[in-house]
Image 1 (cartoon, rainbow, N blue to C red):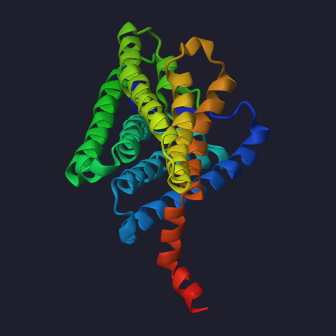
Image 2: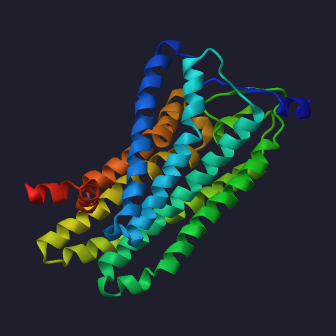
Image 3: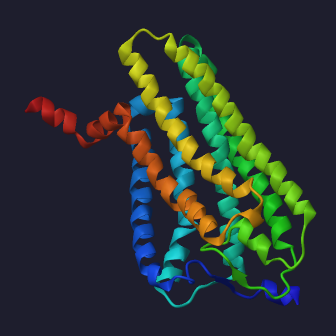
Length: 312
């Protein structure tokens, strides 16, 4: 029976309990998706095209933007199809891929944010040795480690979750194939998965977040000693942007994955999932660009606005 059910389509329940809201939600999601595509693509292109942004910070930021692009693209198109149409299904293979990429990219982003915090620590606390510490080879190795770490965790959790017997259950109580919803489909309780999820949650959520908080604790002490008002504001802008993204991303993820699943209501779970899968990736480029003069100046240089202004 399990072999047959593994080849059957899954039903994504999504917001079917409130059909009157589906069209409104689809419009909101579509707008956020467009902002995500335009914003993150802009950051990647600007960081690549402008030589003044060829620094470790923007190398990491480009990777973060690429992760966000892939993450939302693995979820939103299928979600919009289901919201706009009467068919709410997804193939078993499509569900498995969506589940895998969501885990892989989510875990990678957790590690990337920790790497970016270390970069800010080196820039603020070790400015004279920054170029030596954040050598291009080291930066590439750190990013590669983040990608491989995300891949490893996704392979482990996917293989364990998809092997769970579902006893013919096909309804996924979410708008995409996410781990908590897939585990709830199982007709048996797995202590092994619970232990693995908690362990990986500590490794990919609590440990990176602790390192980030320690980094910013040291950065705060260093900032208090800065006498230059201009440099003080620049540090606050770059670090403040990163800390805002960290709070939004880690806060919702920890609430969803580190809290016992039976204590989270259906509506509560959908809201937090919608936030960290759709809203946060669209806010990242806005947070980084609106508070960052370097990116704004780079966009103007690429578009030739500065040259035009100088001529006028």
